[in-house]
Image (cartoon, rainbow, N blue to C red; front, side, top):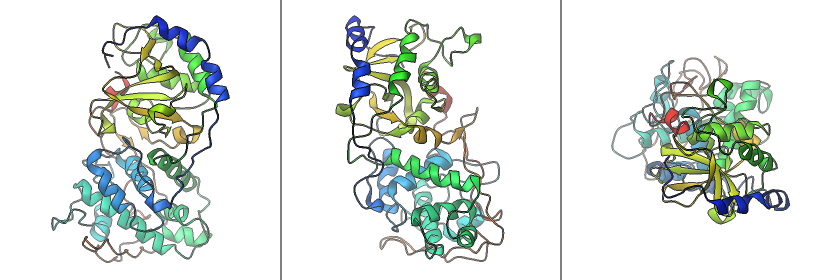
Length: 398
C-alpha cells in the first residue's frame, strides 16, 4: 500500500519513543472472551464478514441455540475464506465445502429462488447452518457444552461424540473445537473492552529495531533477503519474536484476535487497510500501532520501515493479537488457497436429522442413508479451494 500523504513524521518518534511501554503495561481491561448476551444472538464484529454475507450469516447463525453468527462465520472462513467458488482436491464444493452427497441431503434454498445451488453463497450459508443444527440435534442428549459437542460431531461424526460422551479423544477433533470457538471470538462484536495483549510491548520493540530497513515485496527478514520485510512479513516477525505465530498474509492476520474500536486502540494492535471497507478479503496492508495515532510499518517499494499516521480513508480496523486467535487460523497454501480441517470421523456413524428452517425459508430435504457426515462418503472437505479473491499472496506483499 502506498500511504497517501503519510511521510515519516519526526513528531511520531517523540510520541512513541516515550511512554508506549507504559501504555502497554499499565493499561488493563476486562477480557471480553464472549459477548454478554445470548450466544446465538451475538452480533458480528464490523468488517469481519463481506457485507453481502453479513445479513444471511446473522440470520442463519441463529437457526438453533447451539450455533451463533460468529461461530458460523468462523466455520465458513475456516473452510474457504468466504470464497463461493472454492473447490477442494477431494471434490468439496462452494463456500461451505459440501461434498455432493451431503449437499443432496442438507442443501437449502437460502435465497428463495427455487434452487439449491452449492455455488450460491446464500444457499451455502443456509445449508451450513442447517447441517450444524442437524448435528446438534443428533448429539443433543450428550452431556457437556452443546456447541462444543456439535463442533466435535462436525469434525469426527456424531457417533464418536455419543460413544465418548462428549468431545472424543482425537487430537484433530479437540483442536478443531478449540480453534473454531477461538476464531469465533474474532468475528464477535465486543461488548466490553478487549483485554490488552501481554506480548505487545515485545512486538513493538522488535519492529523498532527494524526502523530504516528498506522495504522488500515478499520480504520476511531472511538473510537471503538482507533482513528486509514487506508489511505482513514485518508484523509476522514482530509477533514471532514474542512466541506468537501469525499467518503470512495480511488478510489472515486480521482474524488473529478481537477487534477494538478506533478509540480503544492500544500499542501493539495490528492496524489494517482495505480497498473495499465492506469486504475484508480486500485487506492489503498492515502495521503495528504504537500510540498517538501512529504505527510502525513497511509501506511500499522504495520506502523504509518507518512511523506513519494510521488515519486514512482505507483504514478498516484493528486486531488485538492473541495466541489462541493466531493458532486458530487456517493454513494458506502457496497458491493462495486455504487448507480446511480434516475430518477423521467413523464410517458407520448415523446421519443427523435435519432441523426446521426459518419460517420464510424452504425446509431442507430429509436425511438419507448416506452414512455419517464425518464419514468418507459424506464429509464435506479435507481441503478448501482457491483464494477468496486471488489476492491472498498479494495481500501479504503490499
